[in-house]
Length: 288
Image 1 (cartoon, helix red, strand yellow):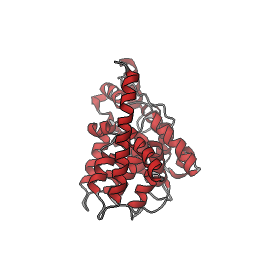
Image 2: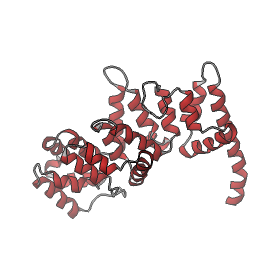
Image 3: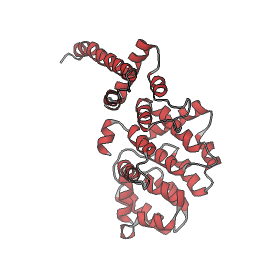
Image 4: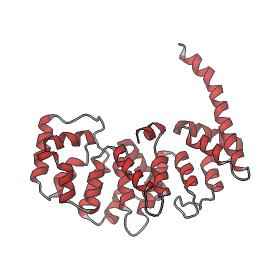
């Protein structure tokens, strides 16, 4: 196959598709009532790179940035993603259109704006992102808000073990090969954690940079395969939650968070549902 010829033949057709999507979004907002079905079909159904292409076409044709236009039309309060005026659908559209670094930087800002951290939201983001995603979010957070994430953690995370663990995680050196540890290394780590008692230092040092498959390698060498249970017995609060989040499969953890959000006593937690689903690619949603 002549790839250059195929690319030259496809590009005009793809451009027409993105131009049509841009037109559909614009006209959907000008209908009374707003044509939500079309907006959902286009904005939720497209991949991240497709949405970027649509945004380029939209700005060229209408002289407005797609994200700003959607936020304005959905009546979102300027400069504040999580305001009371923002509907769940508006949040979902916003998260889908935003590039990952900008979106995650805004999540970090929202989780750290108060007197103390919104620990659960902060743990969800920091402990589930890849090295590259987390590094990009940290850079964008500093450029957008003029704040260093490590310094913010030192200021807002009052519990020492939790603070030290999160500082270790944001070094962005997690092993992402998704291969188990060799038997000797797993046994060494298991013994060290078992002998540590309630001393947090080995748990911080060993568990921050590993993946869930490596955690299972360690657990297989741990007494009665009860490493996770021991973590929950030995530690509490934000530190325990951060440890258990970090060593789980990303999709197991997010699935449990989504289940909680869907089954709240006062009804579904729309913000949490939109934050989880809006931050994932289509392939990741399938895994979830």
